Length: 127
Image 1 (cartoon, rainbow, N blue to C red):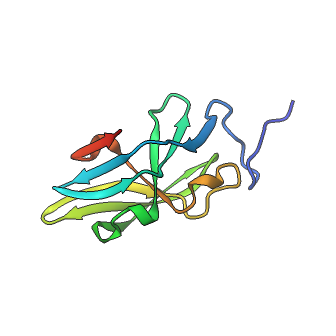
Image 2: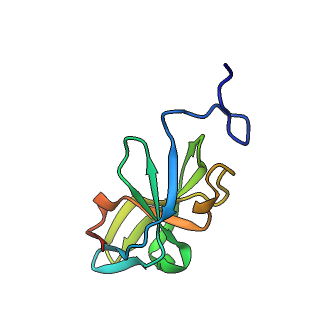
């Protein structure tokens, strides 16, 4: 039996099944007394053994608080991620947000969406 591969020929991890769906929830991310993202249109990404991650449409993120970093990461199911730090006033949170600008065809829904580490934000509300 051959191993499944992604659209660029890398082996997929069969234990990392990913499900992406509209969350139908209002999600707010705050840091340093600023609302960084606020959306009723988030996507919920569910990946084995990980907490649910909410991806915000880029239009619902206040990009003036995000600064690109040199960090990058790769997932064989999603593709290459770019990272941002959040800066509000004198407060900075390094590598707090990420996105997949060109996700693999196995996970196209997350294109033009940004995720945050909920546990690192000052306030992260899911209603």
